[in-house]
Every structure is written in structure tokens, then in C-alpha cells.
Image 1 (cartoon, rainbow, N blue to C red):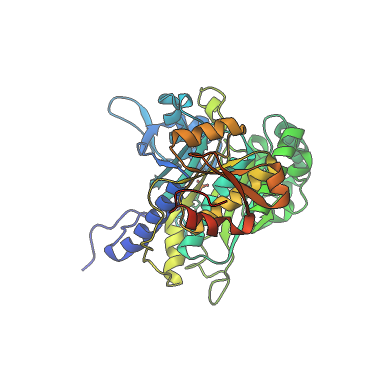
Image 2: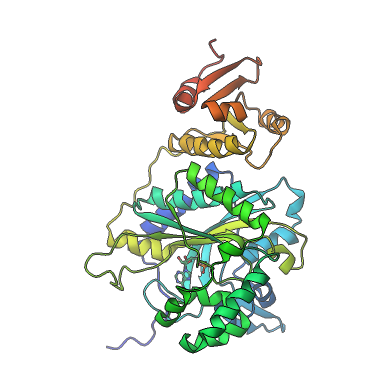
Length: 442
Ligand code: AMP
């Protein structure tokens, strides 16, 4: 008998046998978020259409073609959210979160909606989780967001990940690059797909994002934004890469990575699984594409009519992750010995090199499941020690210039004021012993 009703095209049920995958992802995201002091936020599934028009951009595919938009009985134009960042920023502004200590670090998960052509890894209702750090322009935040995104996939069991990174500049340097790119693309107009011929007028940068083979060929000869960054964007990108080097993250520069949303500035990145699916490389069952995408969005707040607030974040496609986990029969069990309890250690740092190295150390503590508080975005040692005091933390690890150069760290007992030096490669081991003891033996 033919079934009368089916789910809508591109929409699917998450059946009981799939729940274990969703649960494992949710718990992993929660555990990484907790460690990095990101707090959960939930925003409504419906927002005023204008929120997405202003933030994501009217001429993007997501807003221009893919939004579920309708007028309510009361006459408001509203849309099902196609992505998470715009709503989170709207909430930050609406609730005056600039009055909180910055950056405000948030994570979310839930359903999102895009009227896309359904194909492998592309649905009309799908789930994402995402991280947002709002209110801090430092490159260390970009490093932290990339590290956390990578951590989740790694913890889920993905082994062959690559992080593609690029900088797309800001309102200072992008207009000039746009002109140069426009000149090049105009000379190749007839070799572009029809969509891109239209994009040429509206947003030439997006042509670099087009997956059509014709356009890929044109892209291969296009000028690269990275050669045309202003001094500030160049310095920012250099520092982000230095963080990624120090964190030993597997990244490659992709000079044509632009990402399809208007709010991005400076750093953009995507995390891809490089494992070739069994059989053909193009097996539609397993070729799911990018797992996580993100970047910096320093103009978003102003685009929404708010004050000048920088931000950086990422979003992951849960169905894509589940598809790969299933096809590879990856484990859905969740380790019970998650990091728990309030931190007994505070990691303070002074200077750029120390900041980079302390982020690496922080990750090592996370792997060892020892809770540690940090304040990577604060530069003065005094402020950091004050924070440690407020948190009632006994052990402070101080990572200064000298320490960073000579690979040791200074441990301070906040109760007695006694300090001692520990070699960097012994810190995690020593601290895991010490956090049970009362005083430092000299
Ligand atoms: P975006 O918001 O476009 O940067 O997407 C972030 C991530 O969400 C992508 O890397 C994908 O993993 C996932 N994603 C985006 N669109 C879809 C879709 N239509 N269906 C399933 N996953 C998607």
C-alpha cells in the first residue's frame, strides 16, 4: 500500500537508532565548551527576516534563495533560522551583554533550515552546534575557536582532519581587493557559470566559493586576497597562524576560501575530513563535504545596528558528522571520566609567545582531564592574578617572556606566596600530583 504522507523533501526523522550519535556529539560539545568556559545559549528558531538579511546578506544564496520566510498573522515578516550566529549576536545586543566581562563565550545546538537542493550532506532541516566568542578582537580567540572545533571532531574519533584557513580582510582592504578581483573576473566572464555571471555584479568574492567546474578553472588563476591585506589584517592573520603552529594543528592555507556569508572579516576556516571513502572518492553516501566552518565577524554587530563589537565563531553540521560516524562504525559510547569540579589551577600569561605556549599547555591539561581556569584575553598579570583570587584558586601557573623562552613555568601558591619553577614538559604531571597537596615542597 502506498504511504499517503511522507516527511517533506530534505527533512528527516532522527530515529531511535540514530539518537546515540546525536547524544555523543552533544555530550562532546558540552564537555569541550565547559572546559573552555563557554556557556550554553538558546535562541528562537524564528527571527525577524531582517536579522538575517542584514547579517548574512541579502544577495547570498542562504538569504536570497534558501530561507523559509513568511508573514505571521500579525503581519511580521519572519524566517526560520538558516544559521546561528546572527541570532546569537542579536541576543548579545538585546541583552546588553557588552556589560559582562568580555569576551562573552557561548555555544548552541539545534535545528536550522535552508531550502537547498537535497543531496548528500545537504538537508532542508539539519542540526548544527556552534561556538561564539563575542567582544574580543585578539587573534588568540581565533586560535581558541579553531582548537575547540578541532577538539570536538578529534574526540569523536576523526583521525584525518585538515583545517583550511584564509583571511578575507576587512572593510579597510577588501574593497580594493574586490576591485582587482572584479577586473580579473570580468576578463573571464564568458568562462563563468550563469549564476557567477550574475554574482559578478553583486558579489565577485562569492565566485571563489562556486563549486562549478568552469568556475573552479577561472578561480585557479584569480588574484589572492592574502596578497592584498592591509597591515592590520596581515598582522592579525600572521598571529593566528602562529597560534595554529604552536598548537600543532594540521592546517593548510587555502587562498580561495571565502565562505558564503557577508558578516565574515579577517580569519575564515573550514575543517574537512580527508579520508577517502571506500570505493570511489565521489561515493555520494560518504562524500559529505565540510564538517565545520567558521571565522571572525568583526562587523556583524554594526550590521545589526549595534555598537562596534568584534566576534569569532564556528558552526558544525551534525548530520554530516553522523553520516561519517555511521559509515565508519565509530563508537557512540562516551567516556565517563569527563573533567569535573571547579578548577584548582589558574594559568596566567604575559606576552605573545607565552600566550601561544600557554594555549598549548591548556590543551594538554584538557587531555589530562585536569580543570584549569585561564584568561587568555587579558594581558596584565595583575588583572589575571585578581581573577584567580576571585575564583578562589590556590595554584597559579605564571607563564612570562623568560619562562616561554626557556621552557619553564613559575608556580605560585596563592596562600603562602611561595613560588617555584617547573620545567614545561613536567608541568601537567607535577600539577596532577600537586592539586591534592597543601604546600609546595621547596
Ligand atoms: P555554514 O553555516 O554554511 O557555514 O555551515 C556550517 C556547517 O553546517 C557546514 O560546514 C555543514 O557541515 C553544515 N551544513 C550547512 N548547510 C547544511 C545543509 N543544508 N545540510 C546539512 N548540513 C549543512
